[in-house]
Length: 76
Image 1 (cartoon, helix red, strand yellow):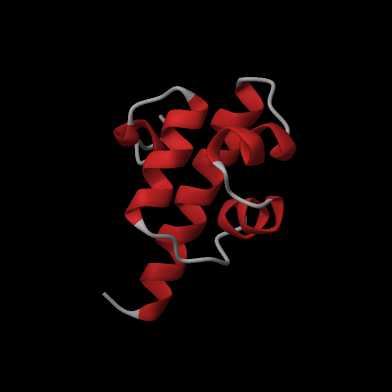
Image 2 (cartoon, one colour):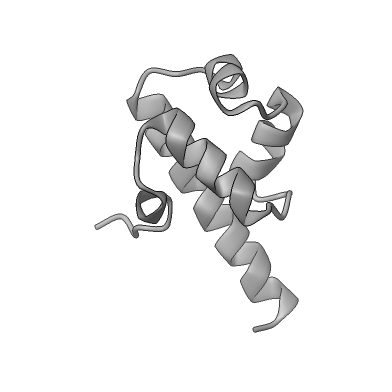
């Protein structure tokens, strides 16, 4: 995989996180508190600008009350 593909995947993951967050009626501050991740980092993640560790993905999934796989599921 090239860097471009990684960027595409990060953006896709970020969009999915944002969609789930918004569908649950949460703002970034809510996610910050629940996941223990700064709003600045959440913004970077949702915009595909930050590569994140798997532990961060787990924290986000727990904060959003979804299984980790849901963050990677493609929209139909």
